[in-house]
Amino acid sequence: MNSNGRTRVGKYEVGRTIGEGNFAKVKFARNVETGESVAIKILDKDKVLKHKMIGQIKREISTMKLIKHPNVIQMHEVMASKTKIYIILEFVTGGELFDKILNHGRLKEDEARKYFQQLINAVDYCHSRGVYHRDLKPENLLLDSDGVLKVSDFGLSALSPQVQENGLLYTTCGTPNYVAPEVINDKGYDGSKADLWSCGVILYVLMAGYLPFDDSNLMELYKKISKANFTCPPWFSTSAKKLIKKILDPNVKTRITIAEVMETEWFKKGYEPPSFEKTNISLDDVDTVFDESMNPGNLVIERKEGRPMLMNAFQLISTSQGLNLSSLFEKHMGVVRRQTRFTSKCPAEEIISKIEEAATPMGFDVMKHNYKMKLQGSKTGRKGHLLVATEVFEVAPSLYMVELRKSKGDTLEFNKFYKNLSTSLKDIVWRTDASNEGAENECPQAKLYE
Image (cartoon, rainbow, N blue to C red; front, side, top):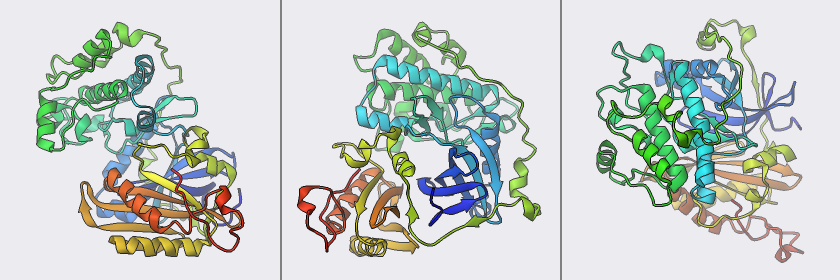
C-alpha cells in the first residue's frame, strides 16, 4: 500500500470511512505488520465526555471482549490517543444481511433458516455470557465472504450488572419495528426474551421480505406490536408459522424460550452447532483507555497527510459487497441505497468545488476538510436533517472515485438528493463508453455508479 495521503494509527494504516454514527466513525484499515484487513471504530474522547457516554462505551468494549464466537464480530484490541479511542474490529466483506434482502427480496425458507440458526447461536452465547444485545435487526447482521452471519453493533447492549434484583432491565432502547412489547410498556423486561422477539421479527423479514409490524404513526405501530397484530404470508410453511407465532407472543410468560426454539423440528433441520474454543477473558484493561494519567508511551499517535487518499486495487474491491466488482459499476433499479459512487478525471479540487456549487442552491450547508465534505440539509425531513458525507479518493493518476454516503436522515430523501445532484454534476462524471472518445480537454458527461 502506498502511504501517501493515508492516516497511520499505531501499526494500522487507515483508509476510507465505511460507517458513521453520532459519536463514532468506522474506517477500513490494514495491519502493516501482518497485512490483515480490519475495521477501526474511532470515537472522539471530548464528544464521549460531553454526552456522558463513558459508561456506554465501556460496556460496548467490555461486551466485545467477552463475546468470542464465530457468529459475532470479533474485537482485536483497543487503543487510545490523547483525543481518540480506537476499537479494532474484524473486517467482513459480505455487506449487511439487510442489503441481501434489498437486492434479492425475500429469502427461501431453507436459506432464511440457515441465517436464523446462526443468529440464535450468537444470541444464545451472548446471553450465556451475561450480554443482551437490545438492538437486533438485519442492518446489524453482517456477512463475511463465505456468507457466515456476524452480529455487530453492541452500542446498546446491556451486561449482567445492569440487571435489577428482580431480573429485569428498564432502559427503553432499540429500533421501533423490532422491539418487544414489554420494552415499549416501560415496566421492565427480560433481556433474553426481548432479544428473542427481535430474532422472530428478523426471521419474518427474511422469509417475507417486509416487516410484520409497520406503520408511519409510531403510536399505531406500538399498538400493533402490543397486540402482536400480524399475519404470515401464504408461502410460509406451517411449521415456520407456528414457530414465529410462538416467538412473537406478546405475553412474556407464554413466549417460547431460545432453548425451546432450538428443540423445534423446524430449527433442527440441517442444523450444525458452531465449533469454537471458549476462553477466559479479563476486563481489567477496559478502564485504561479512558485514563487521563495513562503513560504517554502507551498512547498511539495519529499521523495525517493532506491530499486525496490513494486507493489501491484491494481497497477498491473492498468497497464492493462480497468482493464482487459488478456492484461498483452496475445500477440496480428499484433498490434504495444509502451510498453511491462515481468516478471523475477532473482534478480533486475541481470535484470538491463543483459539488459545493451544486449542493448550495439545493439548500445544503457545506463543511470542507481537505478532500472530505459534509453536506447538511437545512430542511427537517422525515428523520431530521439529511447529512451527506462525501470523500474523494485517488484511484490512479488523474482518476478519482467520489463517494457520497448518507450519515443521517432518511434514505429515500438521500436518493432524491443524489438524483438532483447528479444532474448538476454531469460535466465532471466520467463514463467509459464510445461517446467519450476524443474528449481529451474536458471532463466527460455522465453516469453515476451505485
